[in-house]
Structure formats: structure tokens, C-alpha cells
Image (cartoon, rainbow, N blue to C red; front, side):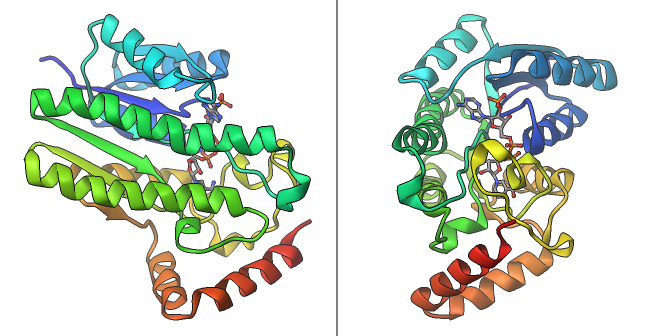
Length: 264
Ligand SMILES: NC(=O)c1ccc[n+]([C@@H]2O[C@H](COP(=O)([O-])OP(=O)(O)OC[C@H]3O[C@@H](n4cnc5c(N)ncnc54)[C@H](OP(=O)(O)O)[C@@H]3O)[C@@H](O)[C@H]2O)c1
């Protein structure tokens, strides 16, 4: 029987590798996308050996202009019908807004916002034409707060949630077999938490950090059930509902104080 194809961006590292594992275990062939080709081949090889699936590696810098269009053209040109799109690639920079190079913030917006929107547009059209498909857009609990010293990142994730929830309603009104889901993890144990290339390191208590495999599993399950929004972890959901009951300006001040204290 023909297996469905899934495309995962940011498949070379972190939660992206766990999305690949989860989708491969559920019988999807995989298109793996990120910049580091060698790592992509390593992950693809592991998934093919462990799960007997087919893989394609497509190295791609999603910060480049029109990267999404090029990627879509290459994938469709190979005759691959993507039935599950995971927009997972993401960038974060910690630090004061005025001290981070503007070019880095523009790359962040290009990957977290522009490429995610363009890939959703291109693959959603194909899915609607076929009458089947799932799109999972990775946001963050940062979407619900203004986070000082991660302000562009948090705003980019607020975009992802707002865009995805509104689109979910549009898609639901048009097609039964197609769905769009926003995934909002909180701190997750990946290099995003302590990558020196991303600015000042944050020290986050271990108890607050999610396992990337759990985040990927809850995200894929939520998308397969057609849920609009998935927030992994019970304590995470509880903390977020408490925070949302407080005035936004207070929460932002609190986040700023905690972030400045938490920087190693
Ligand atoms: N870790 C957390 O605490 C956390 C919490 C909430 C949400 N998230 C979100 O979860 C997603 C995955 O994050 P992660 O924690 O797994 O981070 P990660 O370990 O840093 O992985 C990020 C992935 O994105 C890819 N990527 C970055 N820039 C790219 C570009 N210009 N073009 C193509 N691919 C690019 C990276 O691959 P290459 O470097 O090979 O290109 C890598 O595979 C992100 O959207 C992030 O915002 C993470």
C-alpha cells in the first residue's frame, strides 16, 4: 500500500527529529528540510532503518527570499504529494532588542513567519484540491505573553497562533479531510535553550522543561484529531490559564524580571 508523505521543516535537530520519529512510526514517508544536510541524511537514514520508510532530504535555508516556493516546486516536481506538513523550523535570539543585529531579527521573521505562511499557503492548496491533509504549525506558549529580551520571537509566535486559529476556521468551513493545528510547547529540552549562537543563555529549572518526544507526540496526535490548538503538558496548560487571568502588563513585567534573573 502507498504510504502518505509528511514534510518536516527543521528536521535536523531538536523537536523536528522527534516529529520525524513520530510520523515514521505512524507509517509516513518523510521529506526532511533544514540547512545542515549532513544531519538531515543522518536522521533520514535512522528513520529508514528503524521504520522501513522512504525519505527525501531537501537542504534549504528558509530565511532566503522565495525559499518556500523553491521547496514546494522541488517536492511537487518529484511527484511527492505531501499529506502532512509540519512547519517546525524556528529561530530565537535572546537579548535586548537594540543589541541584536537587525539582520538576525529579519532572518527570524523570515523563518518563523514568512516561510511558515508561504509553505502553509502552497501545500494547503494542494491538500484542498485532493480533499485530505494535515498542517501542524509550531508556535510556543511565548505567543500568549510579551517576553522582554525575546520580544521579536514571542511576537512571531503570536502571529503563528493568530494566523493558524483563524485559518483553521476557514478550512473547517470548506473541507472535511483537511485540518490546521497550532502547537504551543513551553520550554523544551533542545539546543534552543542554550545555543550560544542565539544570544544569552537562559537557565530554566529542569522541572519546567518538556521532553521533545512528548511535544512531538502530542502535536501529531492533536493534528490527526483535527484539533485547532495543542498545548503539551498538563502543568503547562494550568500555568497558562492562570497567566491569562492576569493583566498583560503585569505578566510582561514579571516575565522581564524573571528573564533578567534567569540569564546565566
Ligand atoms: N525548545 C523550546 O523550548 C521551544 C519552546 C516552544 C516552541 N519551540 C519551537 O519549536 C520549534 C523547534 O525548535 P527546537 O527547540 O527543536 O529548536 P532547535 O533544536 O534549535 O532546532 C531548530 C530547527 O530549525 C531549523 N532551522 C533554523 N533556521 C533555519 C533556516 N533558516 N532554514 C531552515 N531550517 C532552519 C534548524 O536546522 P538547521 O540549523 O540545520 O537549518 C533546526 O532543525 C521552533 O519553531 C521553536 O520556536 C521550541
